[in-house]
Length: 210
Length: 210
DNA sequence: AAGTATTAATCAAACGTTTGTTTAGTTTTT
DNA sequence: AAAAACTAAACAAACGTTTGATTAATACTT
Image (cartoon, rainbow over all chains, first blue to last red):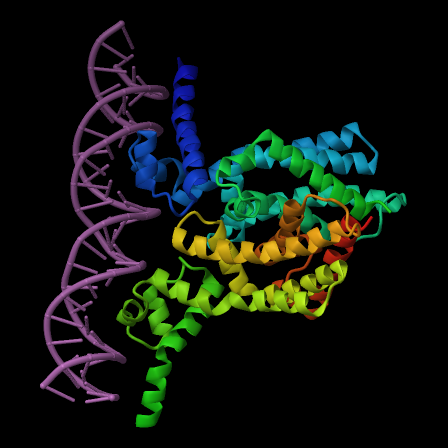
């Protein structure tokens, strides 16, 4: 009974987080008012300040739930494989998968990251992501140390990798117009994900391996 | 004094555009209020609606001034060179130059493009940019037709090209953290631009040329 | 176990700003 | 005198946050 209660409580808080994640993903952070949010979640709008202190606090709570996932998968790669190129290839698989599966929220994150507003959120995001990027850079450095990889500009290579994905996700409008496609949903199909994976692997392969 | 006034007046519209471009670039579109804008420009805030109809109209006026430049340069390439790879290489030069020189405003544009808000502006931007991208894709297709280029995924290659640049410009925070750099201004130095040019050319070269 | 005191959760209403836009009137140009 | 340029003030809507009261849950005392 004490357990049941605390679960219920954390459930409401969690519910608010889930609804917020969905709405932020659909319309962007600043486009969603806490009134809209509270209405959609079926709670009083004062509860947002009550639970999270502020709208920004709510956003931070969402982040806290989301970001650690990718890190774990990268560490899995480190544990399971040693070959530098295989590590890169699996990294591509992981990132395409996680960013396309959560494309709406990925858009919120990358958009928020590029904003100069709300520095607390920006700092949180940038720190997490660049930590992951350092791991990937480690993969490249190992390949270079063993002579399997070219001595490329690693940081800019990361920018190309990350930038390809964010462009696909944030600028669906442009990608569709390029493809002569009208339905944006096509971008998020499995078939398209395969294309992105193949492209990134091919490009990085020719870039990294002499 | 009378002369000075009349000159100022005829220039007032243009002055408003210039100040707005600067402020939007510095803080982003929605972060700049028309009050702040009018104050900075030294005009009454009603003049924005008077001249441009709305804040959004002002933004459109800025775009109208800015975007055509790159197109002209691409057409210059088409006129001056025929070798596919040389065309690509010169395209890299042009884009690195124009996006880094106007990095603040480029950020506004790419940010605005990825927003779902303000569809009129988005449409305007996407149409212009994807028209340019089509030209660049034409360069790649010619290289492929003549057998000099690999048969890569052209649209995704464009995403990598464009994404690399926008990531450099929009996510300076992440790039700095990766480089262990504290001063963001370093990203926009000539030395850095050279690095980006070299990276993009090298990557695209290995990607495109067998 | 019953009753009381404390704390947590919830709510409706209002707060004080800020936003983009419009009005109604004045000054300046033509 | 007609038209264009300009202004101060007001407008209505939206924003995130706070308040003060009410209900539900928990702890403590007897």
